Amino acid sequence: MPTAQPNSAPVARVSASALERNARLAASILQAGIPAVADLRADAWGHGADAVIAALTAAGIDRFRVDEVFGAAARAALPGARLTHDEPTLDPLTVFGLPGGAQDAVPVMRLCGTVLSVKALRSGEGVSYGYAYRAASDTRVALVTGGYAQGIVRGLGNRAEVGIRGIRHTIIGRVAMDVCVVEIADADVARGDEAVYFGDPAQGDPSLAAWTGPTNMTAAELVTTVGLRATREHGG
Image (cartoon, rainbow, N blue to C red; front, side, top):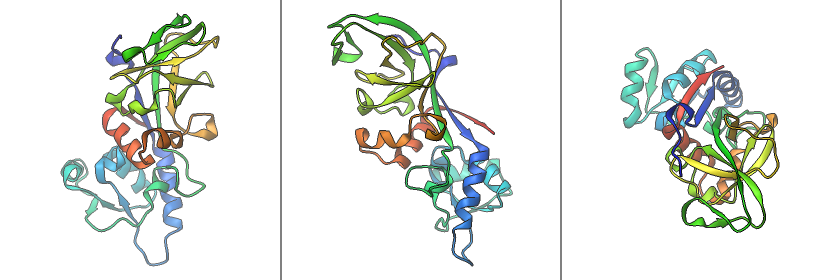
């Protein structure tokens, strides 16, 4: 199976504006007199502590819980930040827009891959490791960047979907190290198309919540795993 090229590796896009919005929301529901302390452990749950501090500072948050692994790097990058070992008071599910957070919170991370190739798959032919999936009839498939090395857990094979050109397509077969295969049938899909693993359901993206059942992992565990493994981009 081909390996994804570096310039087409999946990207976890982190939205600063969503972070600011969610942080203000999380702070607004704190009880009076309780200081706002944001949780930056595990590199801000995989979102990147330095970028998260910048966004939350813009939202008026000035105290941040760190851990030993990423705390030193955060201190070096942001010497003026108020880093603490106090327990967080802001709900991180709300801050990062994860399932289980405040209803009005929006997802902060959007994980996208790229279609590497499209090909026909004949009835009875298999895909990926061990040919665990075999086509029941003639169809078409796309090879998409993103695998377990980037946090796309193997248990998602045959159970999760990606969005390509606004249409959902099921991941089939076993998820490989850097790529996976999705069934596209007769959909209009071409090499270079963006494939969205999860993002904002309000914008038509698949939801990270769909990953929790097949993987037996929480949304927090999943987004942290992805953020620590995939290439990250920070923007508005």
